[in-house]
Image (tube, one colour):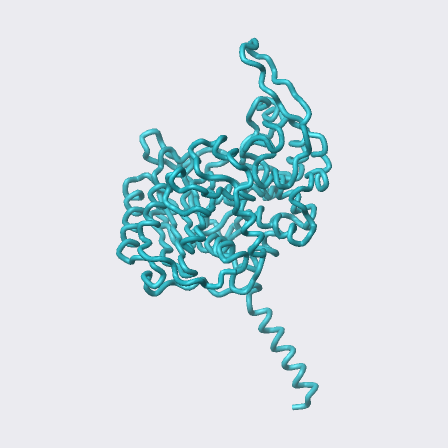
Length: 444
C-alpha cells in the first residue's frame, strides 16, 4: 500500500473512532469489591440499607437513591422504593432527580474556575460584570411601635456587593422576603423556582438590582438569589449560557451523563415524581403548579437557574464531589487547583451563618458550601472540615476529607415535613465506618 494511501486510511480510521467514541468518555469510579478494604463494614452497610428501606416501607418517602464512596471506591449505590409510586415505576440507581440548591455547588465551581483564570476576582464588585448592581439599596423595617402598615424605609447600601458576598450568601439578597417582601412580590420575583419563566435569568437578575435588599452587604448571612446572580456573571464572563458552560467546562469533562437543566422528552420516564409530606407524616403526590412535578420536561426551557435549576443522578453528583475531595481533579481531568478547593471549603463568614440559622451551631459557610468546624457543637456525625449542602426537593450531600468520604442521598419530597431521611442516613453512613481510610491516595 503506498505511503500516501496508508496515511489516508489511518486518518480516516482515527476520525471514525473519534466519531464513534462519546466526548469526554470517562471510566467509572471503581466499586470496592470488599468494603472492608476501605475501612467500611459490610455488615454495617447492610444496616444502612435496612434503615433506608424501613423509611420507604413506613411510607415516609416514596423512593430513595443512595451513594457512598470511601477511599476512592464506591461502597454503596442503592435504589429503594418507587420513582413513581402511582405508575408502579421502581426507583433505579440511574433515576434522575431535581437537585434544586445542589446546583449552587456547580455554579460556585464555575465561578472559581474563572477566578483561577484571572477573569473574575473574589473582591470584585458585581457591578464590574452587571452594571445594574452599582448602586443597591436596603430595606429597613419600621421601628417597634410604629403604626400598622408603616412601610419600610429604604437606605443606600454602605458598599457595593462583591463576588465573595454572593458566594458566601452575605450579599443581603434573600428569596424575596424581608421588610421589602411586598415590593419583590409586586415585581414578580419571589421564591427559588425559576423553571417556569419564559425569559433568561439575566433579565430577572437585572430587575432584582433595583429592589431593596434584606441586609447590608457583608453584615448577615441571607440565603437567596446569590447563586442565580453568579450564574449570570458566569454567562457574561464565560461568553455562553450557564447551561453550555456547565456542560462544556464541568459536566462533559467529568463524564456527567445526566446533569443538565432540562430533560429531553425521551428521558421523561427516568425522572422521579415529586411527593409532599402530609401533617401525619404520610405522603401524597405533589400538586403545586410550580414546584410539584415542575417544568423540567415541558416548560419554557429558557431560564438556567444557577441557584436551583439542575437535574442530576447520584452517580453524576458523586463524581462531581469526588473531584472536589481529590483537590479539584478526577481521572486526570483537573477543574480546580487544590488550594482553590481548600479556600472554597474554609469558613469565610465567622459566626454569621450560625447566627442566622441557630440549628447550625458549630458550622460556618465557605464559597458555596456549609463547613463543619466543631463536631460537638454541631451535633451531627462527621469531622471538622466536612462540607456539603442540600436541595429543596429533599436531596443532600457532604464530603468528609478526614474520612476520605463522599455521600449523596436523593429523594423527591417537597415539603419534606418531619422526614428523618437525612438525619438517619448520615448516622447510618458513619456507623458503617470501622477503620481509618486507606493510606493517602495522592489526592492532591
